Structures are given as structure tokens and as C-alpha cells.
Amino acid sequence: MLLTETDAGQIALEFLMADWNISEDHREWFVMLGSRLIGESWYIVELGVEGFPDRWFIEVYDTGMCDPNYTFISPIPASEGFSDFVDVPEMVAEVLVAERKAR
Image (cartoon, rainbow, N blue to C red; front, top):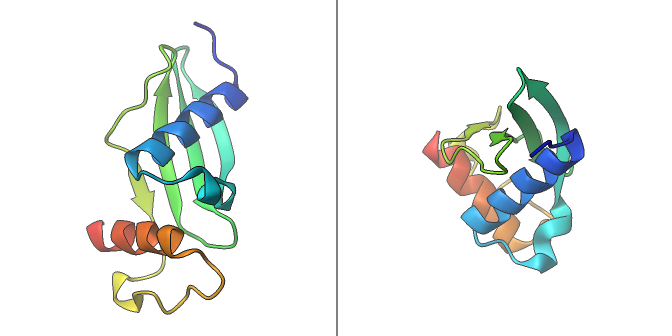
């Protein structure tokens, strides 16, 4: 299977949505920020939430599978809790807070 950067981005986005049980209503908050081919068989896809510095880096293989051990990076400490979420749906805020606490 030959994937494009866009295909890899869509696969990674679907993976993240399923991993966190994010409803279709909140999907538009998540965006692909980048996708690059590594070698010949996999991509690293960078995902984020519009307007926030938090980033997920997910490996997508040419088989269409994602590595479940993705990387999450945020410059915002977990101790901030929900303080930086004003106009964000509760589900999106909960995902970001949980990821920040887990790192």
C-alpha cells in the first residue's frame, strides 16, 4: 500500500479520535500540522488542537496501521489544569488535560 502524506494524516487522525473516543462533533478541533515520510515505509504525523501548543506525533506505517505508543508534547504543565480552556468543548479539554498529566 502506497500512502501519501495526506493519507497518513487521515489515518493518524482517525487513530487519535478512536483512541480517545472523540465524537464526530469535536473532530474539527483536531488538525494535522505535518506529515513526513521516514525511509520508505512509514510517516510521522504531527497532530494538534487548533490554537494550542500541544502536539501528538504518531507513526503511521505503509500498512495503514499506527504505532499505539505515540508521543505527546506540551509546553503547558499539567498543574495548569483546565485554566487555559475558555471556548474549547469539555471533551477536547479533558483529552488535553489527561495527556498533559500522563507525560
